[in-house]
Image 1 (cartoon, rainbow, N blue to C red):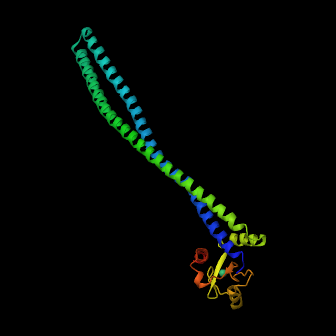
Image 2: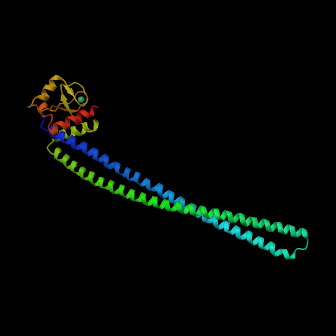
Image 3: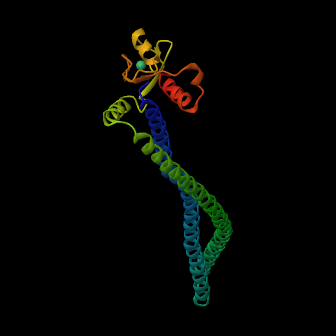
Length: 257
Ligand SMILES: [Zn+2]
């Protein structure tokens, strides 16, 4: 095995963690926006209840004015009674007075309805205020959790970046370049375990003489899979369970799925 391969496996593992952590960190602002959306619904309901309250007050003032105007009219007609000379005119006036009084009664009925509707609107405002308060509490808690997660992921990311630096340090320059070239092409899966003359990343055959070379302890050359171009490495069956080889192998195998 080329002496840099264990470091490259470490590097690949660190890079995968870095990518996963970055994508988690990127999803957090979206979750903040989703949490905030809970608030806008509750705020809208309160605003609409308050608008209904304003409209109700306007309507109420208008009806109060109606009541006053019809009362005033009825009073005027009654005042005219003393000056009436004919029976005909008296009847006409009586009719006007009755009509004005009926209008007063109608406006008063509507005013009463309006006041009852106003009480309903007041209840709606109180409910909306309570719901908004609840939503604010929930969203504040959501924010707190998301920010805590952000801090934790950020810390993990710093750890993974440090691991990356440590893994990269002993890797020669030409292999670093090779690594980043293949990483770009294969979404970070640069190394592939060769097992039973097969590349576990792409599933294609590894030529027997290359496979032999990979298995040879003293081999210090870098071999690529002829099909996918990844860097091949061989792990002795007994050492498959060591953390480094095990994880590297499974990461490589995952990419072929
Ligand atoms: Zn391959």
